[in-house]
Image 1 (cartoon, rainbow, N blue to C red):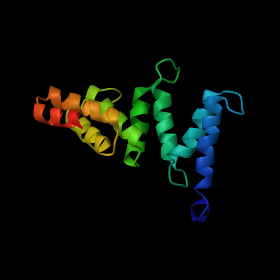
Image 2 (cartoon, helix red, strand yellow):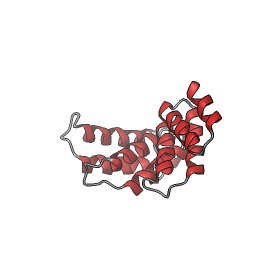
Image 3 (tube, helix red, strand yellow):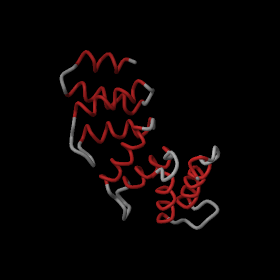
Image 4 (tube, one colour):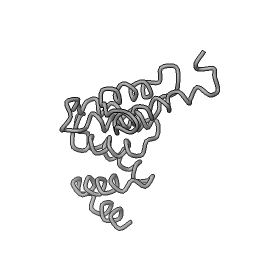
Length: 149
């Protein structure tokens, strides 16, 4: 079975990179539909651990306003999945989305939690948004201390 093979992690990473090649048109004709297809295979974890990079790629894919697949609820879903699996980019993104109510219900406490986690791991974007969130909640000392870092 797929899950028992010690090398089974190779297949989903190959699926992710095939999707990336289609998205970038690198070595193949550019096709966003095919990119999405391959990323979904890698991200869903059917018989393997999901590929976090594919989850993050899907989240950004669905976040593009100029795209016919623009869907912020799907973007939130995939960023949240990737954040739970350790994606620093997606952790900052779910913090930002929660802070402003983009693709999800606005939740300042949840946003601060996500942004704090991402900031502690070095995400500068999240750190800036966390300063903003602290300032808006009138937590001026926290905002100033974080901004000085």
